[in-house]
Length: 274
Image 1 (cartoon, rainbow, N blue to C red):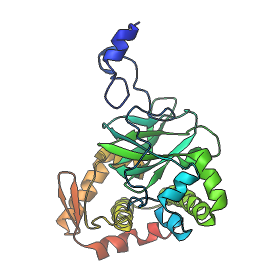
Image 2 (image 1 turned 90 degrees about the vertical axis):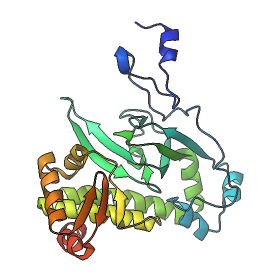
Image 3 (image 1 turned 90 degrees about the horizontal axis):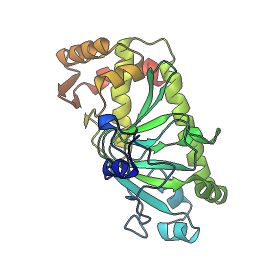
Image 4 (image 1 turned 60 degrees about the vertical axis):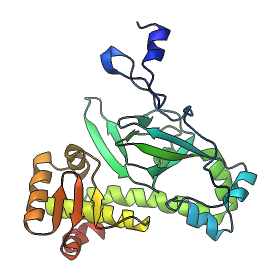
């Protein structure tokens, strides 16, 4: 068993533990607060432009100074290195987080060690809502690139939501959106429909946060995309190549440009409307 000093030597700047060389598995950032957490976002009044809660709070006449008066502290976490666990399946639930920078993957691992990818979360989107019912996180959340988060104490945000109907409605809307994404994947859709819907869906989600809708990075591995879409990795690669040959997209390493949005939306229509 490694000594306490040896364990400390393998701690990473993000607060985790380097598992290389037979060391312990890296701990998750949640529910404990990492040393990199800062309880001040640097602006006492304005919300981040990508924040999933900003419009709901603004509609209720709340700015950040009012949130601090209600002891609703927003804690910045990160940057987290690729592969860092934000939380692990079974960790006690006490917080949700909004992605500020980067991409977070959520997934489960079954008893045989097989991973099931549940989703990818981009700037402005929330992770951790699925833990509300069971009081423990039902999945893993893993940074795919350099990630920064805003951490919200859930007990505190629940108190705030009870006072602000608009914020409560936004929480319900976010939960409903997650359910809708899962339902789409359960349908009997072709590989073309699934991949077109995946690309159009990412485009729309980024556009809603003010990012470029037609050119973006796919920070996740092709194997993760295939897992999420319930397809074989070879099928994903083949369809993406064909889409490029047909002029629907242009792929340069991990960057994807949508060249024929109308054509992709037509393919994705049956899946996105479910």
